[in-house]
Image 1 (cartoon, one colour):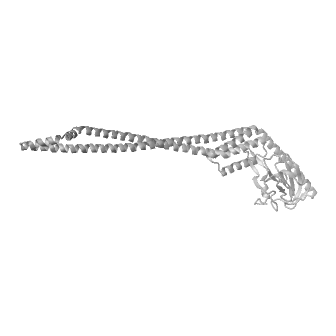
Image 2 (tube, rainbow, N blue to C red):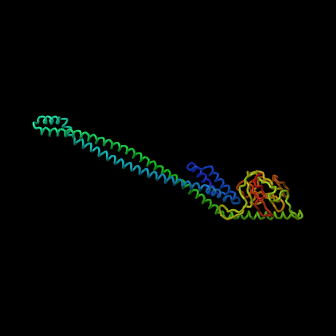
Image 3 (cartoon, rainbow, N blue to C red):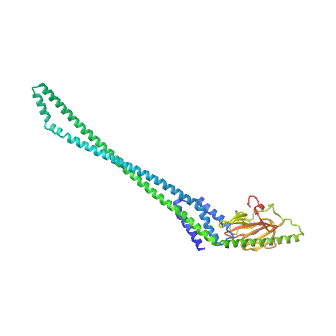
Length: 413
C-alpha cells in the first residue's frame, strides 16, 4: 500500500505542478473522475491494494492522451520556432552582406572624392594665384591673331576644366553621402535582423524546454502506470481468489433461495403466484434514490483482461440513503453475506427474488413480509465495496438475471 500511496501522491503533485504550464480543463478533470469511478465499480471485489492501483491506472489512462498531445504540440512549436530562428538568421546574414556592400560603396565614393580633390587642387591653386589673369594679359598682348585665338581657346578650355572639376567633386561628394546613408540604413537593418534572430532563438529554446517538460510528464505517467500495474499483477492470484470466493458465495446464496422457493411451494400447495408485484417489471420501483453507476453483465477485468460477471446493477448513493423494497414479498435473507456485506433478499413469488447488498444497516428481519416501496435498510459500503452504493440483484430460481428488466424504464423514483 505504501507504493500505491506514494504513486497517488506523486500524481497529485505532478498534476498540480503541470496545470499552470499546460492548463487542465474541467472536462479533463471530469474525465479523470469518470475513469476512476468506472475502475472502482469494476474492481469492487478486489483487494484494497488492487483498488488503489486501479485508481492510479485510471488516473494515468485519463491523463496520458492529453499529456501526449501536449508533447506533440510542444514539439510542433519547437519546429516552428527553429524555422523562424533560421529565417531570421538568414535575414540577418543578408543584412550584414548588404551593409558590407554599402560600406564598400561608401569607401569607393570617398576615394573618388579624395582623388578629384587632389587632381584639381593645382587648378584651384592657380586660380587663387591669378594664373588665369596672367594668361588673359598674354593673349591680349599678342600681335598675332592666330596666337590670340589659340590663347582664347586655351583660356576657354581652362575655364571649362575648372567648372567640370567642381562638378566632379560635387557629384563625388553627393554619391559618397548617398553611399553613407545606404550604409547607415543597412547597419540599422542588420542590427534589427540580428535582434530578431536572437529573439527567435530564445523562443525556440523556451519551446524546447516546454517540449522536454511535456515529454517528462508523459514518461512519469507511464512510469506510474507501470508501477501500479506491477502492484496489481502481484495481486492477480489474490484478486482471482476473491472473485472465486464471491462466486462461491453467490452460488451458496442461490442454493438458499432455491430452498426458500421449495418451502414456499410446499406452504402454498404447489402454487407459485407472485405476491403483489411479481416479475417482468409490473409494479416494481427503483429501490434507491441514486444514479446507475454499473450495469449487469459480463465485462473485461480492467487490469487482468479476463472476463467476469457483474451479477447486478449498482446505484451510487450517499451512505445512509434509504433503500426501498422493489416489490412486495417475504424477507428470505437478512444478514451478513461475505463479499455482499450486509444483505437483504426478498422473495416475490414465482421463484423471483430481489437482493440488496453492501447495506450499512438492515431494517427488516428474516420471514417478515414487506410492501412494495417499504423502507428496508440504508446504503453503505460493507463487504467488498469501494464506496457507498447499492448493489441490486434479481434472481430467478437462484440464478442472477438483468435487474433492469424488472424496473421502470426511466430508472427513476
